[in-house]
Image 1 (cartoon, rainbow, N blue to C red):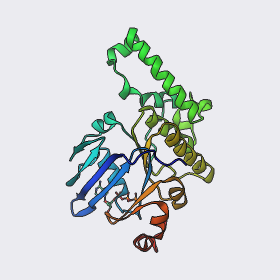
Image 2 (image 1 turned 30 degrees about the horizontal axis):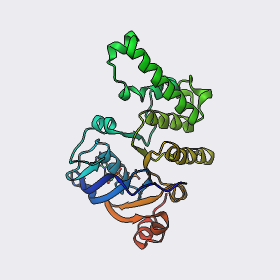
Image 3 (image 1 turned 90 degrees about the horizontal axis):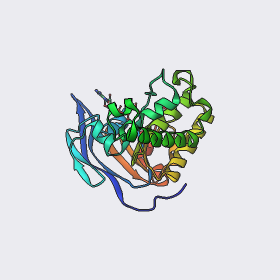
Image 4 (image 1 turned 90 degrees about the vertical axis):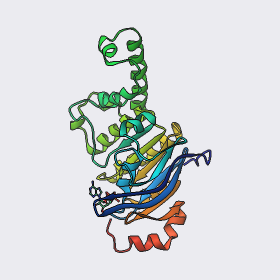
Length: 261
Ligand SMILES: Nc1ncnc2c1ncn2[C@@H]1O[C@H](COP(=O)(O)OP(=O)(O)OP(=O)(O)O)[C@@H](O)[C@H]1O
């Protein structure tokens, strides 16, 4: 695995707090994500990991604090602004158009990139046609990269879980994101599928230089894949550092003791 080329900060989370009624999901959490790194967010169940991803991509608006992304600071952002701005996301449970083929699902990820309006697209005329050809080309390249040529025309509902996750990854990649958020990319996978997914995550980071933030419960995977790890417990950041530093941290060991994963 290649180390990030720079220490440039792509995203900064500063003093973020989020509550749902009386439940404090996040309390004064700060950390950064450097350009080109694979950053893991870990912690026991209910630690606030998914809430953190949801704040980063604008699904939730924090009660306090702010996010700086590519130099722009905001207290709140809408999901469409996050995706337009270059943040793509996959979900804990696969969120694809199940009746559509793998190819069409990945193509759907390009919609945000399309400049011509829907009418032009429907007419498939002139510049819109040229644009569609360019998008097709990019999508075919992603299909090739993720080694899913054989299933490109198959409706997603008929694919194994591992392949569905791969198509979802392809759809996120089709957005050519600066920051890719992966919510438990290996959840529910068998060992072989996990190994494949790990390889693709490292390859995406290497090949496209995409910055990746991921939530993952499998510690072996996290320690293997990530450049740096931030640890949450009960909504509070308890550690932040390289996998080796985090592994030795007493607060982390205590937080995980007796917690089944
Ligand atoms: N939409 C919501 N409404 C109310 N409470 C919520 C909501 N989302 C999360 N919470 C609460 O916020 C806390 C943090 O939840 P979150 O899902 O972010 O944790 P997590 O670390 O992702 O957990 P897991 O590993 O189990 O997925 C929990 O106490 C949870 O019950």
